[in-house]
Amino acid sequence: MTVTRTKHWIAAGLAVLLVLGAMGGCSKFDAGDPNPNIKPETTLSFSPAAGDTSNYRVRMNWFGWDPDGEIAYYWTKWDTFEWRRVVNTDSVFLVSASADTVDESFGYEYHSFSVKAVDNDNEEDPTPETVAFTAFTIVPDTEIIRGPNGVTGPMVTFEWAGSDRDGVIVGYGYRLYKWEQSTSEWVQVTSQTDLDAETVVANFGPIEGLHRFEVWSIDDAGAADQTPASREFTCNPELAGPKLFILSNVFGIRTYRGPVWNDVYNVPTPIFAGERLAFEWIATAESYGGQVVGYRHAYDDTSSWPSWSAFDTEFSVVPELGRHSLYVNALDNANVRTRARVYFDVVEATLDEYILVVDDWDSKEGTPNWPTDEERNAFWNTLLAGYKHIRVEWQPDQHQIGGVDQAPDVDALRGASTVIWYADQEYSVLNALFNPFSSSYNSLAGYMRVGGNLVLSGQECLKQILYENYPMTVEPADTTEAARFVRDYLHIGSADYSGYEANKTAPWNYGYCFYGDNPTSSGEAFGLVDAYIDSVGPSGWPERGKWPFYVYTINSNYTRCGLPGVETVTAYQGTGLEVLEMDSFLNMNFEGVPSSVLYLSGDNHANTWYIGHPVYYIQDGPVRNNFDKVLALFGEEKLE
Image (cartoon, rainbow, N blue to C red; front, side, top):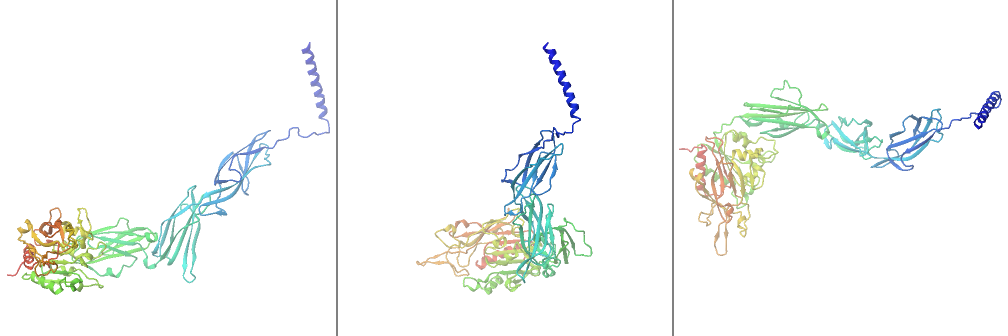
């Protein structure tokens, strides 16, 4: 029964609702939309803290909800820019950080971000979510990699690079200024502020005078380097073109710059016939930031030139007798070239006309302890009397160029059957002849290469040649002209010297220790004899002679006192013969050590005899005997 009654009540209720519904449809009263749209809402779920300072790479996350629908999209906006429609709910933004507040290290800028959701009925959140903060960036750095610094030519090139610790470089800017002497101020010549990140080279020219170049980097936050990299330089039109270096095995290093070579290179340099010449060259435009793009060369004939090539950097020749020229050009990226010339005369050496004596002594002849020029000449005249070849003398101070003493040149050496060269430890022209930075032809080395004979003696001659202090050693791998001369022509491998100390309380350092030569077994085989200084005899007692130094004590006892600064020399790997050895006083480190090396080629050419002390102070008789024996081995003949 209960269930049936309930059904009757439900049916009655439905009937009433139907009647009321029909009546409402006919009424004039409107109650409005019974289901109005609810506007969406928006929330920033991740962002910089309001009012805080954040990196210029900003991450934002947001979401929206709509109680009666769906979120269709969002509007986002930075600062006062236009709203931008997006569908995503997060993004990483790059904002500027280079505006008003910037110092040398950091850039700052104030920003605001807003976001609002839009639902499927196109209704917007009437209260967008907004956050405001300060963005910062580390200001980029700039470095000039290539460019002039100092005095340079009229064409200049700069290359630079930027770096940024918290971002990337997106561009550069630069300015070029010129110093106006009349107004004493820098005047801007040119400016470029919108270079892209790939443009890292700028060329200027031709320009003249004092200039300043500045370049700065710009990062992806828009911040510019507040301390631009800069260079100040002076452009001299006379320095146009790359700096070209020509290295030769016989001419040393020569330097050229610009389209016209120096007048000095229009004077031919005499060299001996038979020289094998090897040239290498390299140029640089680094001083003005340029690049060398090619070389070319011509030998004698300049009617045709090869094409420019980065690989055209060497040339070798055995020149014939006569006058010759090697021309070398270098070209830079501004199409400016440097021209060079190596100009030389090839002359033949007869090597059979006279004995040349080189009086390479210094100016101490005015002091009583040193011989005068007349005394030295008399000594060598006596020593070399009776030979078929006449004696010819060369005094460097009588052959000066620009006030500088000169070594014998090719013309003086070409007829010499033997050169006898004696040198002091000071002001010797040997020092200039073997200067490693010289650009002149070494006439003595050339003389030896074509088969000349040489006798070399004096004090510290090897130091003058090698530019080294004692003790010294010549190695197989040494390639300098001086080392090759000592090793391959003098055949000496090592040397030391006694010094000049006369303190007898330390006899192992006693410098005045040499008072005689004794022949070795090799020297005896050639007929060499004992040769003592001319004032101290073999018995140890002083005698009157050319060397005045000995000590007279209160007890009237004479003490031996020998020559100072005497060299001991050893032959290079057995290629030479050690023919004399020292008889030493006090300093036993120099007792019995070799003092002379002789090299014999097997014929009358390219023989050498090195003596590690001056021969003038040796007693005349033994010296003449030993010279006669050695010069006979060199092929020098005496008159009947």
